[in-house]
Length: 294
Length: 254
Figure 1 (cartoon, rainbow over the protein chains, first blue to last red):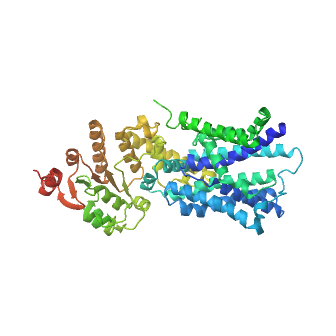
Figure 2 (figure 1 turned 60 degrees about the vertical axis):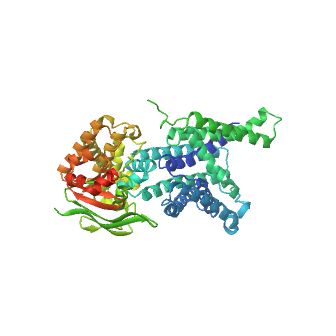
Figure 3 (figure 1 turned 30 degrees about the vertical axis):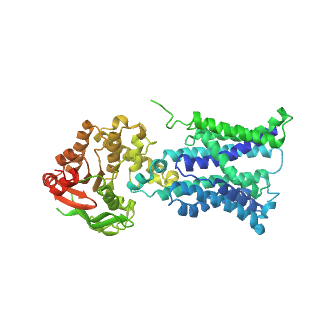
């Protein structure tokens, strides 16, 4: 049981890195990124493939973060000059392309077979999971403190202005594309870092772990919590991933229910939770934008 | 007086539909010029062409002696030519104060590297910029709402805020698109007082406005547009007495 709690916690914290990145992009900059999982995949594979060549894990993870950010630049240059909703389509296409490449380029990625036996962070001992957990906690604290500092800075003011009214930002003599590219790249870097943790925790990755559903889990998490409240992002992620992972225990409570039925029930509950959020707390549980009435 | 902004023979349109045809006007250095015309006359399109949101099909726009016809929107603003919009475009989730701060040009803290490596410089600049923002907010009578979210302001206050944001840029010339529309009469007086005060400090101002009484009270010179052309120019009295202008406004009845 303790092992399971540690596992759930690690998963939550990996998702929290993803959610932090998406919240910076959407909640604070207004970029609709439907391809977040693509950067997650790039980070995951980069770190795994390098580690398999014997590169020290820390360097692998840094490379994964950097490469994911790097991929955001060409994507940003093409997409950020388009209108907001096109970015959603382009990014979704991007993440699916990444998955196809991972599936087809077998010489590099072993295709659908995936990559087994990735070196684990802190080795294979029983204490390793706890170390991974502790590292993730620290990394998350640093990351969220960093995001907080950023959104309170002059940079954060301008991305907030872009979210609220891009045309007016241009009218003030600033080039929105420059700021949006940076926001996209930082979010992508966080996804890449999350991917690296995923690889060195699970020790096995395959393209099917990087389906668009993952992107939408992250979206659900930040929407439930409140897209532009960091506390909301944290709580939303804990709730969603905690539920997704923890609901496996439901089967022990309802022995007659099959695995297939149970997964439908899980989606039903998540769907209802989202609908209720939209109806009663449209800015998320912790959101206070617009909901404040005077 | 030499022309700071001059528009010569500008044409613009969408396909075969011509919105502007052979429009020429000029804003002298330190001038205060009005632009009137009925709905659909092409005034806002002209502003969008001058500020770079719409590419003209012909003609030239020069500003401070430089041909800016092909420049990007933000480059024109950086040269000192700024504008407001007919419908205010406030940054609704930011506070009024942050709206002003976001407008400040070339802030070190807008570079991510500076946030890490030049924190002292960023903090100093923030303080200076904040000082300036507060002064302007008090000039515009907005200091009481400085910490409110801009989305909550009244229509008139949003217009003031938009003007304030432009002033953060220290522009050479500003173009105001219907500054009095949707503003209550008391605030209109206040707003035009501020506009005159800015002009007295040497700022060149071009104003689109439907409130002809208020406009003719403050501008010494005016252009009138109809169906994409300039049909009259001169002092407010001359322009308003012009038969073509009267016909455009009254539909030829008078």
